[in-house]
Amino acid sequence: MNKTKKNCYGICFLISIAINILLSIYLYAGGGRWGAKNLPEISFRPALTWSEKAAAEAEAVAAISCSGHGRAFLDGSISDQGQPVCECYDCYGGTDCSERSPGCAADADSGDPIFLEPFWMQNAAESSIVIPGWHRMSYRYEDNTMMSVELEKYIRKLHSIVGNAITEGRYMVFGIGSSQLLSAAVYALSSENSSSPSNVLATIPFYPMYKAQPMLFNSENFQFKGDTNSWQSYNSTNNIDVIEFVTSPNNPDGELKKSVIGRKTIYDHAYFWPHFTPITGPSDHDLMIFTLSKLTGHAGARFGYAQVSLFHLCLTLARYYTYDTIIYRWAIIKDKDVYEKVLNYIFLADLGISKDTQLRVLKLLKVAIEGDGKPLFEFAYNKMRERWEMLTFVFSRSTRFSIQKRHPLHCNFFNKTRQSSPAYAWVKCEREEDDDCSAVLEAGKIISRRGSQFSADDRYTRLSLIKSQDDFELLLQRLRELVSLENDSIGTM
Ligand SMILES: Cc1ncc(COP(=O)(O)O)c(C=O)c1O
Figure 1 (spheres, protein in one colour):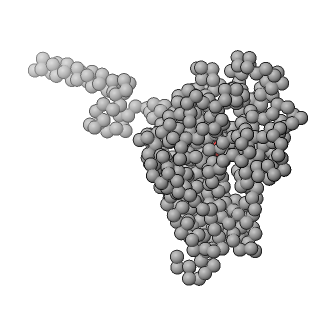
Figure 2: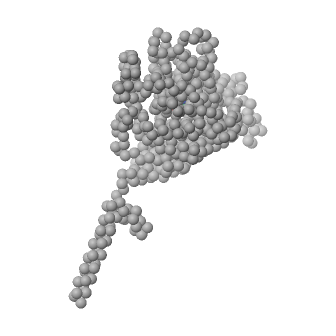
Figure 3: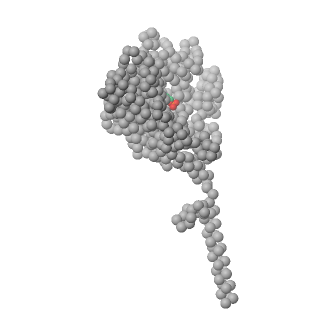
């Protein structure tokens, strides 16, 4: 009897040791997934790893619905109860963004590309990143530059898929949004002789930054001189240095612009993507600027890039964006004054592009090129096409307002002939007395961007079509109301 009891204790002891060993393996050797089906997950789960903890925080904040009329963000405000606060879209309020203010104006002013947000929410798993606290703390990458080689590779791949730019044999420079590259490009192309500064020109209507930046920098080497066509009628001589901005498609009217003067050009291709225009062939200019803002919709990431065909021009731009490399590349810069100016610029500007941003852009571009770009560009183009169809219908009922003509062209990317679907509607008030079109729309509860902001007549005004679905639907509603006032019979539209 005693012997049996002893055996029983021995067996129990051995079983207990075996269970302890198994549990230790489960807890400490990454066995969290082992046996998950049979064991209650919470009670046996080890402490979260750093990436799981980051993911859990991100998922928790993403799960806050804000009634579909707002978003909560990890870096947003926190309520007194310690919860992330909903940031509501225009015209919505309340703690969960469920309250709509009835008389609210439709804000179609800014070019915030939120229309692509649903695509990224549908592709959350593929497009999200985790950044550890020690991620790329250095100013430089391993090759001593400030630009990710892998990212550059993906940008080239994207262009070859879309067919909108020649990249072979071209140099690439990254910037903080394309806005920064616009001024870097003017700087790089400008005359080094301050007694004959370069004349910076653009064709009306043009993106206001082309004028605002040179005016802010107030440089001796370049000056903004206004519209290409008026400049040409006053200057027949060839000995003035000219830098011309060519925006294709154009902001605000969506036109595929060409150079008017035909000398040094900066091609701003912010909108040269299949969502906005048929891609008729690859652009092949000396200096082309692109931006992530209107490609994937990540304006907040502040990432743009320039492609440069001339070697010396690339080096001048590269000097603008690199710090340490400038020292061993200095041999190619002959003028000490230029060197000091560049060095000063770099200290004052930015010391390169955020490495966190470059990592994020890389991840987003990997999604963008999936399925040869079809999922992203089809989503984006369909959304823009739909919006244009609805908008065109409303304006077709009006004699008081008109919008720009759109041109069908063959799109190599979609392999079909299609209309352009610009980011903005360029509205004209046709009645003589409506010489301030923005004010006319404002009276109808529509906020637009007035023509004079683009150096054009105030008879024109710009409506943004790339904001959120809520914003677009409210814009359409306000436009219908305004147009219905012209003729009561249209009120049933
Ligand atoms: C024609 C044009 N170029 C450049 C930009 C600036 O883009 P980013 O966000 O890259 O600075 C914009 C922004 O609206 C634009 O319309």
